[in-house]
Amino acid sequence: MQNLYNLITVSFLSGFLLFILSFLKLNFVAEVLSFISSLIIFIFGFIVFFSPQEIGEYLYLDDLSKFIVLGITFFGLIICLYSINSLNYYLKDKSSKTKFYSYVILTLGSSVISVCSNNFVLFITFWGITGLLLYLMLNLTSESAPSAKKSLIMIGATDSFLILGLAIVWLLTNKTEILNVKLPVNSNLAVISFLCLISASFAKAGAFPLHTWIPEMAEEASPQITAFLPSSLDKLLGIYFLARICFNIFILDVKLSLVLMILGALTIIFAVFMAMVQHNYKKLLSYHAVSQVGYMVLGISCGNPIGIAGGIFHMLNNAIYKSCLFLSCSSVEQKADTDDLSNLGGYAKVMPLTFFSFIISALAISGVPPLNGFVSKWMVYQGMIQKLQSVGNYNQQVLIVLCLILAMFGSALTLASFVKLANAMFLGKQKVIGKETYFNSWLATITLSVLCILFGIFAFQLPLKYFISPSVKVLYPFEINFIGLWQPQLPTFLIVLGIIMGLIIYFVSNLKVRTTTVYLLGELKPEQTDFVKEEFYNTIKEISGFKLVYYLAEQKFFDIYYWFKNLFLGIGSILSFLHTGNLHFYLSWIIIGLVILLLLGIKL
Image 1 (tube, helix red, strand yellow):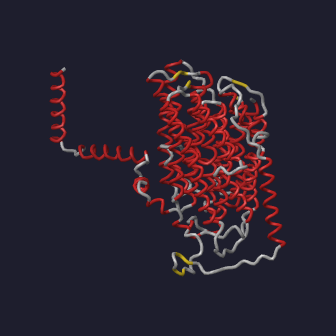
Image 2 (cartoon, rainbow, N blue to C red):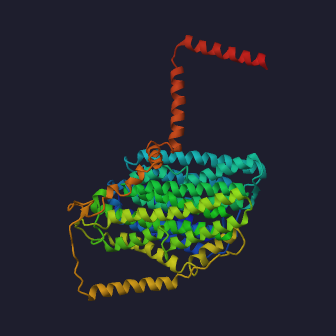
Image 3 (cartoon, helix red, strand yellow):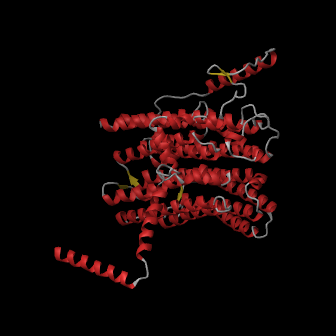
């Protein structure tokens, strides 16, 4: 436990020191200090991972929390490494840059305490601090101030439900230790408590319908912030808490599991359809960050070892490839000075390392074997099939099958949208001038993309053996039962062999490339031989049924934030109308109120 205390101490001391340095505007010193601090924190996280399990009065270490601590510290290091030099593009003010590093380091310490808290009050405190630090990071630029406010309100509101939910748990069980509750959801109060806690988990992770702060935030904030929080850290915290809710705090029944499964499927399909028609790469990736949460929720809601393992593994995989995607695309944005897909293209030639990172992570998120995203999705699908076999109710079986179909269809649509993004950013015939991004930036993205490969090819030998299986046994002490085995080594060998043979044939042959005039419906169209990037998949919006859904989405109809905003503004306008300052008007309302009370009294 001492190494955990050391990690937390280094995080808060270096974070506060960086905050003090922000007033001195020593940008270079801040970059060096933040990287060294994040490296030390990661080393402590690595040591904590191999520490024995221990449960104290306020903090604990088990295999699941140790794994999450390692993930938190790793992504903190990656973001600090990438941000050196590249942060200058997004934050012009030196003070803001140093504050960014300060908030990142402080977030690491707060997140670690949240994950290792075994006390309701301690958990609530530092869970709330991570939300406050998110707001401070988003508020570093005036452009992201509106989304920062929305993020704070949505996460803050669900944090209020978190407090209410844990208070109800304490009322029903007289327990304040997260690991020692196991409350059956067999009463109305227990159901209310469960829904309150789920809302906090969903808002943090970005699951439907509490996801709407993420796309707006991603469009306005720097990709470093998006890669660090909604794409990696918030997913780790939100899904980690979801797992604790479902297996440590409550004992779920089949009906509540199905509710979670439906919400997971809706998260996948709704977000992926929104992603396909985006023209801004940040919003496109942010909707995919939301969509991937659905697979995690589906896996955990299965309630069996293979499903839980798939959900937790997908949480890790998503943090890896989603961070890589945001950072890779950010490198292109810095070179092109735009994030609009219609003004990009052709950067694969001048930025081959960044393109390699992007294409690997894009294939991984799309579930293409033998990469890591395929393995975790495949495990989630197996968990759903086992769940299907375990329920006897026909209607419940139908719901599970529909959720499974939506999940698999969502994976296909994910690949389709990344065809659009890859073409728009890296391919095409645009002539661009430039060179590869900074050494530290491409080193960060290459590291993440290599993990996508390693955690796919050697999934059973590395992440499942050392990270996922021990974590699952903490929640559900049974062995993972695979329906079928996936051996990726032979397919990987054949893929690599095919690529090598193709390259050999290409370089040794005298192939001549023939170009010809392009015709469209019989009409000569020489000026257009490439995809129309800004309109790619726009026809989906015109399909009967989808047109109305997209229109309502653009009008914020599905945004729960605007529901309550309009509600409170409406109540405020009524109160403003009533608050006239006219004494006679007030007396009239008092008399009307007294008459109503009198009539009610007579009736009673």
